[in-house]
Length: 336
Image (cartoon, rainbow, N blue to C red):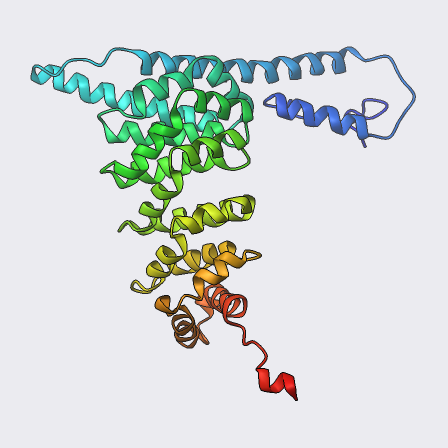
């Protein structure tokens, strides 16, 4: 029965806590069975008014929280000339870290992410925090850029216009902190996936070369996530396969497969599969004798057999063997 019932016998539901909850309530009410219209009781009218007030208050409270966080982040950093100043600086940095953490939590909500940008939050991240001297603030800033940009085209466009892509690629390529590099890659992924302008900037700034260098790093998590992004970009944008082949991507991927075996290889083989699928030039690159890829794949298949945890990697190896080295009919057999 719909909330309240035709005769108001059911107790009223808890009021929704935000606008999304209020919208869900409205949809449910709209889907309820039609009933004869009756005058709204005073009790029901009061409940509805309180529900709407609570929903809008929650949204306003979150905007106020974002404004307070931005006030913390906009404040001038205290000096460090004395012991007291050092303590103030430590406390100030902790406050900034907490502000960025709270903003990241709030901006999981798409409406809040859009409001954050309207409050000039993205500009502050781009101009002051992506390249901040404190790595704890840099990685949090990169994470917040990615969190805001996920699936929100307007936010993506603003981040790109503010030069975030260039700075994030620089962080991914050169930052000494593993955490910063991993979060920069996350933000880059959020700016290029399903965003044509982001991909164009990524290409113009030689992003694929940066991605390959990340795959060649000694940070396992960074390597895995870079290979995964490469694989998805190839699936989403097969028109980039020619560019990647001309960069020697096949040779570099095969070289990575020859390194000491790890779970990372599954994603490298997946990227290589994506590169050669429906792309004869990529197949020809894989067939170059100096790569000895066929032998490598056959050896890997033997190595992985009956190891359930490597089943996907085995599948990729078998797919590459089929795509690139499937036996051609022998001429003598054809004559017969």
